Length: 496
Image 1 (cartoon, one colour):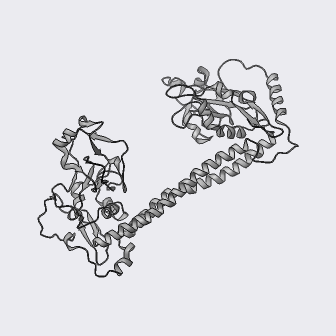
Image 2 (cartoon, one colour):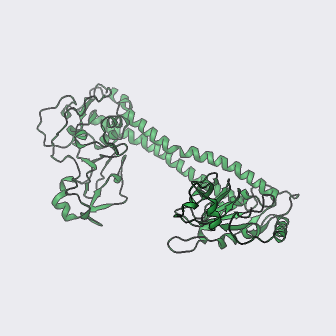
Image 3 (cartoon, one colour):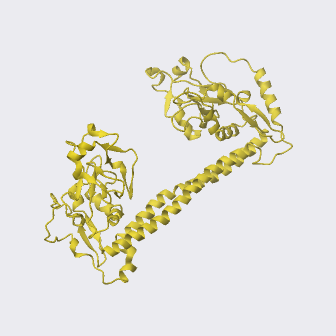
């Protein structure tokens, strides 16, 4: 450690505290758990920082018969192993409790020599260093000896308390900042939905229509209440009364409602979902081949490629070509909460195929703009209609017949392009603000780390020459330990 302020000294955990651990009573022994009243803490609880409750309880019989012991309020717990970010995390018991063997329990003699809050803050600042000390194979672990031998800077007791008070005040401010910045994600979603709501009610482009009064919606698309007599190769079956009772909002005079299938290309498979299970089989999946588009790949306005799956190319050629996409198609989910999430399959990435849970639509670009439809299906107006149509007890869904006859607000192509432009412009501004908020959130985390580092260099609060030096505290601990009777080996309460 670098040179410390006057009155400070360097010590180790084992010099100022008792360090132990707990155990897991045998799960099959009912007497150890049934009607238990003693809180029993596992490593997952360290995320609480201040542990005020337990999810499990054990009995006095478990304490008597195993290596479990009850640690007093104020004990500092360090996770020696655990999943993800758990290892190296620190918390403080706000209740008397037993622990399992994954936690190191640091019991200070009292807060009149070393502040437990001060030590916990120091160990929190050493999270990365503690994780770096862990040893082992697939899941490296800490151990009690590593915890005991950890050195730390010890200031006078009065200064410890000043540091803790200052850290608490700064921590409260950074917590408020994190809370406010974390709200940005929710606000971003709400603002984007508001933009989409205005776009598909016509409010977003009022000025555009006023400057182009001659524009009328293309008649070739047809009205939702009447179809033109053009022969269509795309079959629409089972649509009787699908839209009965659906309340459609009023549109600008130059717009009309059209059925979705009137905006598709005049091909038999212009709108379809993937193949049924009789020919769509997991045994035909491969590590390479034709990419398969699952529900997880369709997000609102975003085609995702994580966790890819592939169809055997020969099987695809034989059975699945009608369900293929090549670039520019609209993808819409049949399932979800809510269903009807839409994106565009990007051009230039090759051929893929949809699963039975994803619908694809080849848009007639003389009738509609694909991105206009994508934004519409992700809008609150479409979601409201989907909510009225969707069915299913466990997972809401829309079927192909509903999708084909789904009502779409239809302005002129020129206005559709302007709507898409304005949506993308608004979204870009929102995303820039969200990115700035994320950067600020990252900076708050780095600021917390910098404040902790400053605290344990003695730079956070002023020193007071009248404070009792830390070396005197250590001498007192040594004297108390030397005078204390040797603890008997056995089970029961931990030293407090």
